[in-house]
Image (cartoon, rainbow, N blue to C red):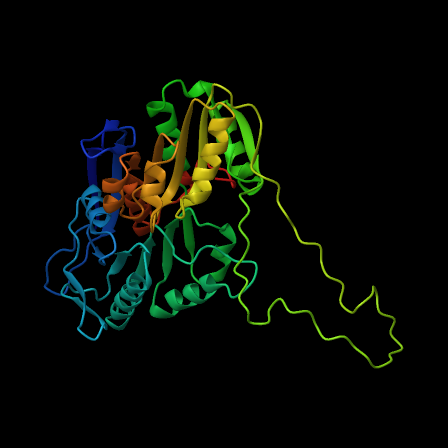
Length: 395
C-alpha cells in the first residue's frame, strides 16, 4: 500500500526584521513526500519524519531555523567538554537505520572535533546515512606554499562516517575533489543579488568592484546580472612577509668543484625577480557611483578597509561589502566601524552577534531556507539542480 503525505506552507516574507535580518522573498512551496507502509520497532506505522537532525554547539540559532522550516525539532543531543578538554557527545534519540543530518558550522578546532565525534557516534550506532550540513568549511583557504590542511580535514570527515556533505561557497571549488563522498556546494549569490536589488537604493547607479584581479570573475558575474559596470582594484598596501631568521631566505652554497655541466648565470643559483605590486589603484570609473565589493569570505578586514579608502579617494558615493561568510575575527568589527564602508552584508552561515554589537554597519541575510530545502531534497532523493538555477561557476 502506498501513502502520500502533502504539506503546504508559506516561507518568510521579504523585508527586515527587528534584529536586522533579511529573509528571502516569500514563495509558496508544496512538498510531496512518498513513503511505503511499514512498521517501526514499536509496531507503529512509520511517518514521514524518518530522519533526525542533530546540531553541535557552533550555531544553534541556525540549526533551529533549519529545523523549524522543515516542521521538525532538533534531536536530543548533548555535546560538552570535560574538565580535561575532551569532547563528549551523548545522543539520546535512536539513530539506528535512520538518516542523520548533523548541522555544524566550522568555527574552530573544537567545533571540528564535535562534528567528527557526532558522526562517529552515529556510525557506530548503525545510522543508515550521515549527512554533514557544514555551512562554512574551515581551513578552506588553500596556500600555494605549505601543506593543504583542507585535504586532511576532508579525509577526517569521510573516515568519521559522513556519507554526504552539504556546504556553501567554498573558498576554492577544487576542494570538492578532496572528498571521497558526494558534496553539494550551495551558493549564496541569489540571496546577495536580491539584497542588492531590494535594499540598496538606486543600485542601477552602482558599480561592482573586484577587490583584487583574482575576484574579477565573481564581480563580472554579478555585474552582468545586475546590468551595471565593473571596476578592479590593482595593487596593495606594501606588507612584507615575516622574515624569520631560520635560514629559509639564505642563499645556497657556491659549488667550488669543477663540473662538466655549464652553470647558467653567475654566482650559482640565479635569484628570481621579486614581485612587487604597485600602490592601490582603481581601474574603472567610480566617481559619484555606489561601489559594491563581493567576496566569499571576510575575516581580516584590513584589505577591505584599504580598498574602501582608495574608492573614496576616487569619488565613490557609498561603499558596500557583501560576503557569504562573515567571520570578522580579531579587531575586524572595530576596523569596519571606523572605515568609510557604509554597510557590511553577510549571511548567517556563521554566528556574528558579538561582532554586530561592535559594528552597527553589519547586516545579516538569512539562508536557512536554502539549507532546509537542500536537506529536504537530499532526504527524498530529489534533484538538487533547482538550487543551482542561474548560478554560474564564478559565484
